[in-house]
Image (cartoon, rainbow, N blue to C red; front, side, top):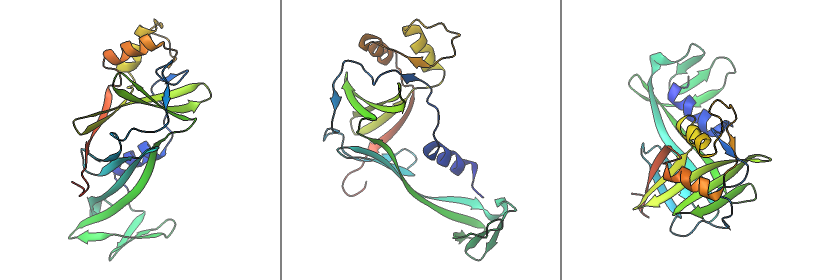
Length: 213
């Protein structure tokens, strides 16, 4: 029933995925943590595909999904049956109301995901004009994301599996064939990682005004 696109979104935001790299301490080290997001960051931002928005408050970053997904009724799995405007799961007999436009099924998806909440396990730091979201992955392992607001455009950067990990190994003089992706960095080494365009996987959002545009 679900398209590959929808399955990918659900998997990405509701499953616990292993980060490409982790650090032994919140980054950068020897930089004071912030207790709130500054007012200049707070607001609502629209994703490039317009299928979701990101909201930043004093303590939270949340992502809200509210969109229609369209697919031809002939693409339905044999496990489902369409009766009028109702989609029936033949395995567990659950029913879902849908919309029809000719032979096109329109399914509406709406949910909210908390991306970050400042706490002992979610540490916010500012360094060199960037904000860093440190999330505890395990006892001594932290996942880090980079956040930048510039001219109304919010960019959230993630560490990629290949290029960024290679940079981190070079910076920390870790043997290239080492399988470990857990790193210990000094503040200077972390600065070098930023200057080498670390956090290569990025998603950009545009600030929305009060009228939602």
